Length: 573
Image (tube, rainbow, N blue to C red):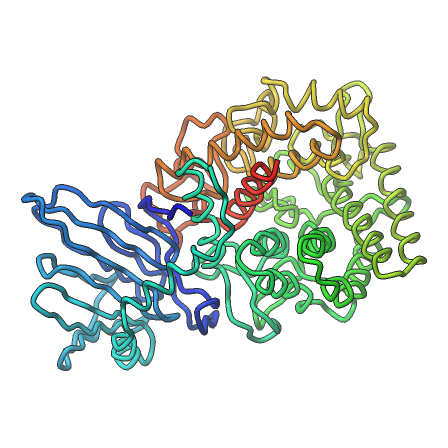
């Protein structure tokens, strides 16, 4: 197993509940600096820690993971010394480095400085950091901690045996699936993707009875239903128990009426929905792990959830489903769909949503299969009928014979909204198309170089759309859609075509990881411009400063999850 070893500005650095307590409002995180060997902490009191490297000819990285950095620093005389950063507690980092280089700590705003023996205490209006240090003839070891008990926590962190802590972090990689004969760069990126997923895991707290995850470790990030389901599914490559806890955590948020919010925290539940994929992901986990409790413990809750959506989000006269749309918004017009600013929603207040309807059919199909496994014949038949009814409605009302393609429909005008997006391929994903229709869609739309067959496959709006500009939902490629479409192609027997989509996605994610050192939320569909320069919600800032404005998220959980899934799928074939 190759280890991730590419330094990337903005890469996530955080503790994980897999290694100890990681409480949401107590845990801190950091991002790697772009121009220095160090960290920018995502804390109310902004802090920057780095090694000042002078007379250095090279820095060679052995490991750059979500919680461990091991570097070899080569000075101008060829002398090599090691430097290590290890996240050892939810609010503490250990650092070991040669005395030849100074460890520097700086802050946003004014701070009060106090030194007590080996402990330096930095207090600002928004919090406190403490740095405890000792040195020998060659090396200096420091522990940096944040919080109201920063000095005590730093001193306690310092007592940890640093080599043992490093060994524990490396042991994580030793336990991952062994994929022989993979190119070294792809193997390293597979390790990186699972390291990112590890960093997302929080401890049980509040609503959450088990471990749960957020889609990134940026400040104020919430649990997000769609993202959590995809991340949890791929966490099975780390641990079956972890995957189960994180997928079931979504059900911990369920309201008495059956609704499962799209976003949540230990003490918060939103009122918005998310694309429903829980039943599908739980069934997939069962098929890989054989744990029947996944199905028996979730069935009634999943049924209640889908019934809620049918009763509250389906059109009155047909089983087509409706997102909430904020027509006055520009960048967040339809957050529920996970395609926030897509041109699909421009000037529309009520929509019969193709993607929502397909996701619901997919859930009904999964729930029908779960019922069959559990011996619930009546439920098996009922949810099979629901699937067929949604399939009939989508094929009757949301398919355009002239274009040979699926679209949303405006409820007010009863006209199709002819904006081509990856959502238009979801009927393939859920098995709505006969062979003739599937052939046409794949040939004339998916593998059409003027529409969706781009260097990085599946732009978020077709290349020939007048609103295509390469931005987040205006032409950028989102890996999860490439994954869904590749699964659809496999289901329809298009193995070579599915492999092509997966290969192109994997190789392009690898290209930009090797260049930028991170796994991005979305990518340039032409694979020409660094994803860091793509428009998200507003133009990207020159530097990656998420607390000022969130640009293309770096070390994003969903992209990491689907990369791991694609690698495993290709490897098994």
